[in-house]
Image 1 (tube, rainbow, N blue to C red):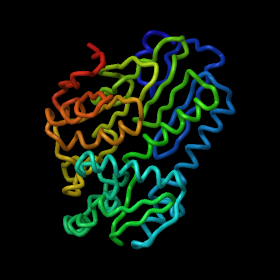
Image 2 (spheres, rainbow, N blue to C red):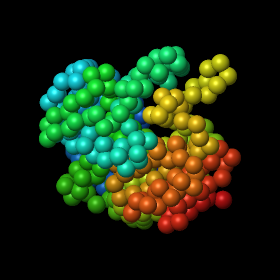
Image 3 (cartoon, one colour):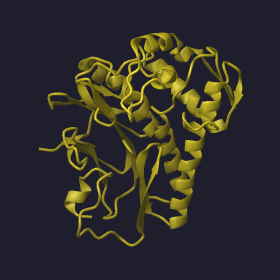
Image 4 (cartoon, rainbow, N blue to C red):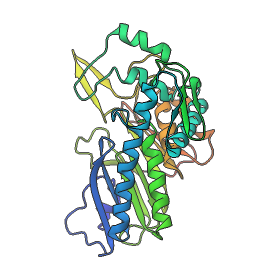
Length: 323
């Protein structure tokens, strides 16, 4: 891999002229409504297992697949639903991030998020949002070993804000159990790495430049041999209607897209689920409060990009800004 590739984001295609070792393999496919790329020094059979794992989790966690655990929970009108143990585990973990963020992250945003359609550019009425908002409240989710119940029959859970982090961590565990030591996972904005890249060097994972429509330019990188970088950006899914821009990160307090001067938030941590659980609330805080919030949690670092292009990092961050 050439020097330019080494500092490019993992979602960028390798530049021509780069020669990877033959045993370094990768695969790209579509899951979770995003482009996924898996790879490393491994046999193709491990990639097969990893892709099958992605498909398995999509069948469990998708809000729009009628037979998924999440869809069945939402359709149960307050009754107890027996679910896969991994679904229960994810819900349990997600509720922890709801609590630690004082509800700025809330998996019951589904009552509101199902009203919005960012693919078709649908803006729900003020009345519809007002009717749905009382059903947003993570405290009314009851999770057991293999069961989930919504105490509010009209509540809806949406795990889209945290599922990719959980899945990324499970994929990295799969690699480890198969003896893989050099590998990466890239599920859209969730990137995790272990060991070394195809040149035997530490991974350089990039933070995408929000102003670059191609998605290949970065504003900062972090060098690591084991960890996860999660980036959420207002540019990821948005549309314009009647002269107003709407983006996909919804504020559970209002039911509308967040009002913020932060256009991109990145969290680096050992576990990818930490990145998912902590990036979204950062858009709903004042910048100094957001940085202080991250610094109050041991083992995570953050980088914020403001609408004016300025970059801010936590004091303990190891990001290297690109000039």
